[in-house]
Image (cartoon, rainbow, N blue to C red; front, side):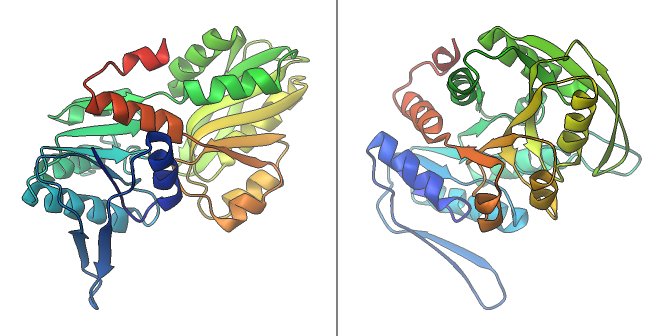
Length: 310
């Protein structure tokens, strides 16, 4: 088994390496003067089961090209099997046509990864589960529940909890978490006027005097979560926390969350935290390294991954 790290999230790769007790394979990634990317695997990978860890987070295009070129390098180095480990799958929100003459970029990225030579993909909480069908190779789409559930149960041991989906599209995710922790479920009904701007319209469910836990896969601008927190508190919620898998937090999102009524925003390290995120008083980060590492081990040993979520 060979574990190789791209530049997107070196710290996560090191934590996965430590969990597996498998050293990171030396890999040289450099840029030429015209910003072309060059990848060289510095160790023999012939006949090996290889895992290249790379989130396609900001700068998304650079990290995506690193991933594709690394896969090609591994393929030409005669690796036996290449698994693209993508804790955060960029372009996942472009999973359908939103109007005339618009792309389905998630499908394009899936085609690129397959064409580059990947044999399978290991990822976490795809924005839409059907993106797995964009690939013609096996895709393991992990749930973050094994990471979040123990954290929530320990922190809110005696609290009256209500799990809240910030939109209708996330109801399945919220329901699964609510079932695991034995909590009630509520839904935020919102109307999005344009990209990056959301307007909370109504709260469906009883949240009065409850600790509300907003659950989502991606927090980008932070507007949806902050507006949802206001709506829940207006309905009598005791306090509001958010548990989101991928902390994109672009633009002024960190400042917006810091000044919001959210008690805490808990994200995973699928995307490397910036210094601003680390300094924010109400943003916490939990590691998915054990989850990613165990899934990679099970893939290598041809064992079941679904057992992790029972």
